[in-house]
Amino acid sequence: MFLSDTNMTDNNDTPGDNSIQKVEPNYHQYSLFDIGIDPGLKDEEGNELPRPFTKNQMRKWLKKVRWENHKADKRAKEKARAKERRREAREANLDLGPSRKALKKMKVEKDKKNVGVIIDLSFDHLMIEKDRYKVIKQILRCYSVNRRSESPLQFHITSFGEKSRNDISRHNGYENWDVEFHEEPYLDLFPKEKLVYLTSESENIIENFEENTFYVIGGLVDHNKHKGLCHTIAKDQGIRHGQLPLDKYVNMKTRKVLTIDHVFEIVLRVSEGLAWQETLMKVLPVRKGAHICSSVSDSSIDISYHSD
Image 1 (cartoon, rainbow, N blue to C red):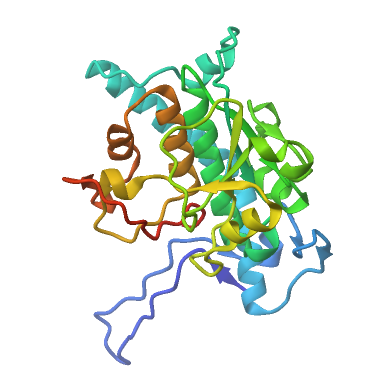
Image 2 (cartoon, rainbow, N blue to C red):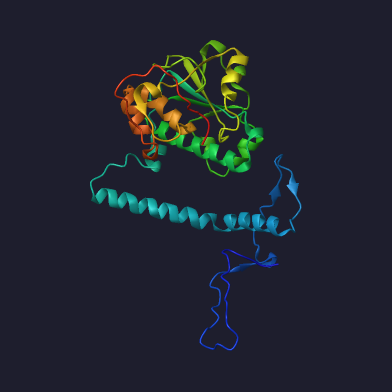
């Protein structure tokens, strides 16, 4: 069996037409004999699966092999691109902030806010592998924006199970992040009276983030398949819940869906003292078409804080 990196282009040669020459493919064809690293396949529970033999399984398997083989080269190219961007920024007198290396070397402990954010990862069973990876990617952005803050939030991740650990292990060094990873659910770690679940279905509007309080964000990318789930969980657990006052400050042209990292950064910026309107205009993507409201609206809107 042979599979290629790219799709082959059919050569519709006409018999007897010597003017058309066959073009040899310029890509490498993979076979079982080309495989130098075997990452193996695992099911959802982490159990090893035998080598696949169907065409679709083999394609997926070889994709993982190619990733392992080229991971080092890809990382090297990313570092080279980042170096080039820094060089261009210096020439243009642009401030990109501290580099990763500089951040790692910082010995002085920053004064953390007395406000915390918890990302609840108890929804692994409701997501396919692709959506779980999206959650990890959004957590990565949360960590990045938090560590660059002069007054970062207390950052906790709860219900950090085997699937989440396997997914995040693709990012080397996550164990050294300034993030508290907990296998336990948040109810086993924090008093109920200090918890507030952020959910768009809540009738409570949050204008200020309280001291000594932890705001929970559902770690779920569900494409609106489980609408209202976080609100239901908060009510069943008897903890407070609330929604962000987006409708009061901005109008959005597109579907009002916020990712995990959007919500995290909004909490961070407002806690830093930035005004709501300025925060929302800064954090929300351009594609959302957000613009400042001309008047204050008292109606709630349909905004999800856990979907992509």
